[in-house]
Amino acid sequence: MGDLIPRTLSAKLLAAAGPYPIVFLTGPRQSGKTTLAKATFPEYRYISLEDLQYREEAVEDPRGFIARLRAQSGVILDEAQRAPELFSYLQGVADEGSHGPFVLTGSQQFLLSHHISQTLAGRAAVFELLPLSMAELLRRSPLTPAMWEAGLSGASVPCAESPPVKDVDETLFAGFYPRIHDRGLDPVQWLDGYVRTYVERDARLVGSIGDLGAFTRFVTLCAGRSGQLLNLSALGADAGVSHTTAKSWISVLEASYLIMLQRPHHVNFNKRIVRTPKLVFLDTGLLCRLLGLRRSPDLAVHPLRGAVFESFVVSELVKVFLHHGERPPLFFWRDSHGVEIDGVLDFAVTRVAVEAKSGATVPADAFRGLEAYRALSGGPSVLVYGGDECYERRGHKVRSWWALT
Image (cartoon, rainbow, N blue to C red; front, side, top):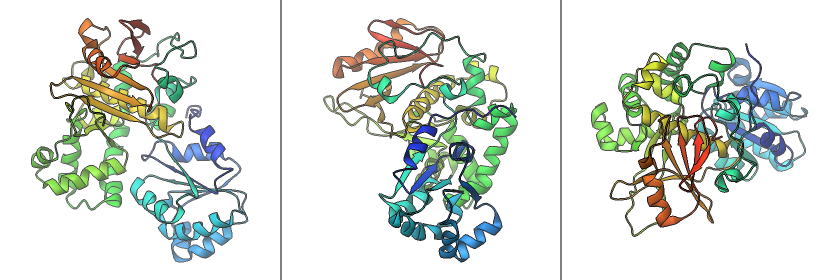
């Protein structure tokens, strides 16, 4: 096993454990939540509710279970969604404010969020942990939301480091789940197991799936549409399920952090905008497996390589914010003529346009969308590409793929 990879979110978790009696950490399965909680709070007592004994105690006698933990200086309750009965009793602990913090971790976003919104609103600090960012993978200081708000201008935004050992296709093919990198595992084998575990167990916990074969087919079809506008009718028809079922299953994938629905930017420029969200996978390794790729060189010649690269850029931008404890103000923009910007970071006063181009070189027409958007909106613009240099061209920041988080 390799050394523990430091996570950007650790500082925010630590800071929240003082003011808030309850800190809630969620995210996809195997994103490193348990490891992060233990590393950030090594003196806290750790209890996993996957353990049958603890789970039975928590479910059968939640009041007594919480009472026994009150004497602790701090407690990590792992997989907290396994005992939702605890939440109403945690509310009382939070209201008293006289006991050490409870750090709750869980993978099923909407189950836990529902209980938090009902019983712990205003009493819990909520954080979301995705798989590793490029900055975490390369073990360097991360970029911050403030750096992106400034359009990556100034000496405070480094880009002079040597490129990573692995090239862009190798990196995207392996994906960013910590265990693959921490233990040097074969990504194909590990991600195959991840997909099976998700379909056979986790998906059924967060939604009514019924036909697992149809759901597996649906997930695979979604992979072929990453980076595209969401068309539930077509997706459902191809999967052999109804529009209603397709909508429900998309919600399951979103709640499990396998995908995100990237919303179109809401500002009208002469009302020439698309209003449908885009479907984006949040891990490129998982996306590559669902596309059937078995070797990283296959990605280099795959017709959806551009969509995989765009998914990578969008997910990295999401991590910039979530791993600093902030909600990502991330949208896309497309007008009725098909001119599109892959990412628009809306900071209220400033909007930063971001375009993803997977090639190792940047042709002149790569800036067409950025220039069309800048003519309408103004503000900084950044082109992220598959090469290794950072520079400025035609008033746009050009940023290497490994230097955007």
